[in-house]
Image 1: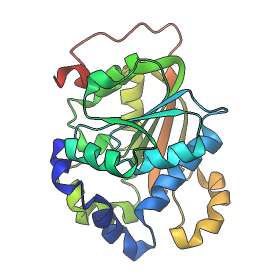
Image 2: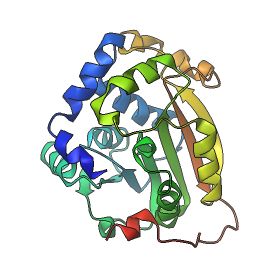
Image 3: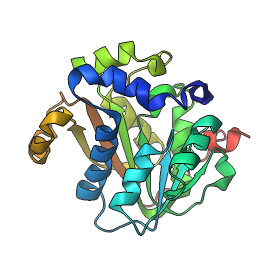
Image 4: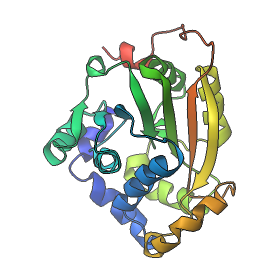
Length: 240
């Protein structure tokens, strides 16, 4: 995903322009996802959080706001994006584009709109690599854009950041989690209201099963009695 180097300084402006006709902005999504994790995924602050594919660090900043006692790490293969994250969010946590900087005991790992930028032959390797870095009682959270939603498809087709990306259906990502040693704990469809109707966000939990949300999320943990996944070198290790 090093092609994002060219967009590091303009990332938020590009996203905001594509979302503005529908009443959204980049910060709304980041805040929403951090709050979703706080409300529905963890019962206490994880000791360590990894934002895998953190981009310029915006979501990591909201995670730190929700979990001020957690150590937040951000990883992205785009060096320019990491430079921007370090510049704007140095107080949030540690950001790196070097996979060897990552730990192996994260209590929470999340991938926010990362997989649709990854080649299909690399996805399982990413999950297997993250399996090794997740604490035995930790959770993994995946957010992805929902191809069933017409708003999502419209924005996706006009966003230059998604020029080489492919939308993924929920069942495909769930299958990838299963093959990579994760048990799915919950799946939800999310983001039903634009930011100017954010006061209605408290009723979205009633719509989590409706497949028309702009995005979806999957929450998983390591399968019980599942051995470390072996196979081809995972993406995190093979990138060097």
